[in-house]
Amino acid sequence: MAFTDFFEVMAPFPHALRPRLRELGLGGKVLLGSDFPNIPYPYEHQLESLERLELGDDWLRAVCWTNAQALFAPRG
Image 1 (cartoon, rainbow, N blue to C red):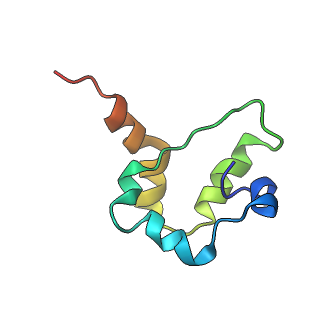
Image 2 (cartoon, one colour):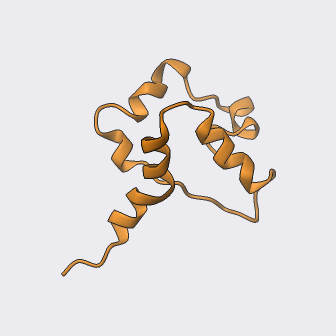
Image 3 (cartoon, one colour):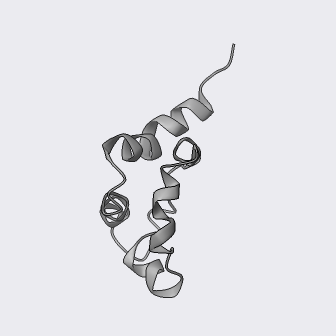
């Protein structure tokens, strides 16, 4: 729910700290998690909210796909 309009009303993430999501290596540690379909907004809104952070396509792709792919990849 982080960064959605629903959650930002109750507990907004400080705007000044948003760049830190990309910096300091944190970008590789952020994963998209969802309680869909048990969320009070359309799933698409979660993705739009992440895109609205304007942290770049590489960051968005990592958060929505490659970070989890790397975490759950079989280790040999």
